[in-house]
Structures are given as C-alpha cells and as structure tokens.
Length: 399
Image 1 (tube, rainbow, N blue to C red):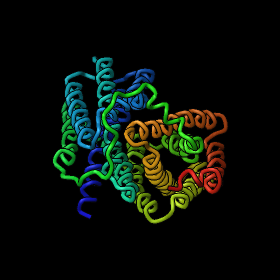
Image 2: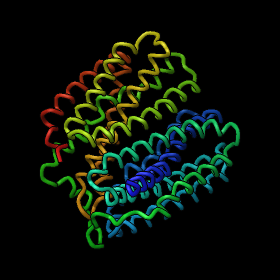
Image 3: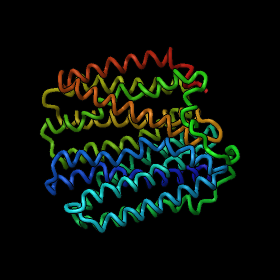
Image 4: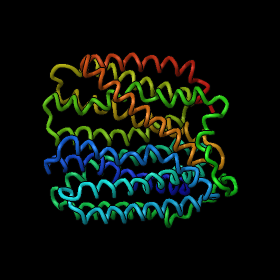
C-alpha cells in the first residue's frame, strides 16, 4: 500500500507541474493583457501556445524509442521540466506590454518542453501502474490537472495583484521545479512491464495505431465521448457574463470552486472504475452528463439564482472530472508495448481535437438558437450516448 501511495503521489506532482503553467498562460495572461489594453485579436493569439500540445504526437515516437525502460522516461521528464522552468524564468525578464511577440514565442517553446514531459509522464505512468491501479492513477492525472487549473487560474491571478509580473513568473518556475522532487527522489518498485528494445523510430509509428483491428469503435468513442457535456462546459462562463456576474465572481465559481469539484470527483471516478465493470462505469458517467444537461434545460434560463449557478457548476465539472479519469484509463488499456507514450498521446489528442470542433459547432448553434436551445441539443446528444454505451460501445470498454 505504501508503494501505491508513492506511485500516486509521484504522478500527482508530475501532472501538477505541467498543468499549473498551462492554466496560467492560457487563462491568466489574457486577463492581464486586457488590463494592458491589448486588442481582442491580440488576446486571441495567445491560444497559439496550445499548438505544441496538439502536435506532440509527431515527436512522441522519438521519446518512446529512446526509452527502453522507465528510468529513461524519467530522464525525459526531468530534462523537459527543468528546461520548461528555465524558459519561464527567462520570460519573467520581458515586459508583457512591450515584448508581447517575444513572450509568445518563448511560451510556445516552453510548451514544446511541457508536451514532451507529458508524453514521457504518460508512458512512465503506464509502466509504473499495475492494471488494477490505473483507475486511481488516472484519478491523480485528472485531479492534478484540475488542481493545477485551480492554482494556475485562480490563486496565481490573485497573487499577480500583490507581487507583480516578474515575481509571479519566478514563483511559477519554482512551483514547477518543486513538483519534480517526488519523481527525482522516490524509490519506486521495479516496473511490471518493459518496453521493446531501443530502435530507430519509424515514420508511421503513430499512424499505425489507426490500423489496428477493431479500433474503429474505440476511435468513435474517443471522438464523441465529451459531446454530451462539452457545450455546457464551454458556454458556462459566457452564460454567467450574460447573467451579470463579474470576472472575479466567475473566477471563483468556475475557476476555483468548479475545478476543485472536478478534482474531488476525479477521485470518485477512480473509485467507481475500480469497483464496477467498465461498461457500468461508462453508463454512470454518461448518465451524470445527461442529468447535468437536464438541469441546465430546467434551471439555466431567465435570471438564475446563485444556488442554481453553483449546482450547475458542480454538476458539469464533477461529470467532467469523472469522465476524464475513465477515458484516461481506457486509453491506457489500448496502448501497444513499446509505444506507450505515442499511443496514449494520440488518443488524448483525438479527444482534445473533437472537443475543439464540437465547441465551435455548439457555440454557433447557441448563437443561433440561444443557450436554452443548445442545452436541449446537449440533452439529446447525452441520451444517445447513454444508449450507445449499452450497444455500440459495450465491447470497446470491456477489458
């Protein structure tokens, strides 16, 4: 049991290390930029920093093929994160109001390192965790991401008003460095599985994942998995703006409270996956998404009372937390030996890309038919997914 706690603690710290800066640069920097009177067009460009995380599957095979064992992945993790922290320190010496382009370039470089760390961390987790430990291990991944978002988008935003830009970036680099301590010094048990011997990566290592027999239904599940709640989640903050809530109130309700709920429910999701069959766990999570959409249809129109906003935030973030743990666990079960980082990265990138496309489509639908119309559509999508979980996707998630 002590060894399991070491594993979980190590993974939690690693996912915190990558999620805090990601959240800070993608959510807090736009707020600071607006205060500096940047145009909305310039603020929109900050989203370019996410490109490395979408394209990281391109260099994932290189990380896998230079890592015949877990200790080699650890070297990638330590090297990437130290470089990540060094670039953040360098960014602190530039002024956001006068060196915007330079800062964006440096952030993209930093996120290439962060994406590399994520590839290595996912493979490290797969090699470290036993099959029965993966549900709890993925709770650490999802929970670490939510806690990182809470710190990066909530705590650090408040800290900015007290210590300023440079001190805040130095603090961020310090947090990244400290999060590496567990993986640096933890004495973990010998890995249960090993990767294939080191060899030169092939150009089609990533694409060959799609050629595996029986993968079509799995890929379809990855693409539609979040479709029942992603519209609720993406339109929640704009809805609160239209309800008259201030930026500070939105940050507290969604950025801090909501993500904290997501972190707690991530642990609950890991417990559910460990205790019941995968098909049952999938149905529970999709049912939670359906109930969330029903609540939005019922209550989230007109002038919504504060309690309704908090309940909605709890439901959508809680569902998202459980859903993240489940899809991470299923993705781990689908990786090929020797290509753990590549295969896991490809699967999660598919969910990110599909969520991006779905968010764009659902936002356009909401713009035409209103929030309430979009909530009704999400309820229909959620019930269809629940039905498919008992038919089309049943064999996909069974071990």
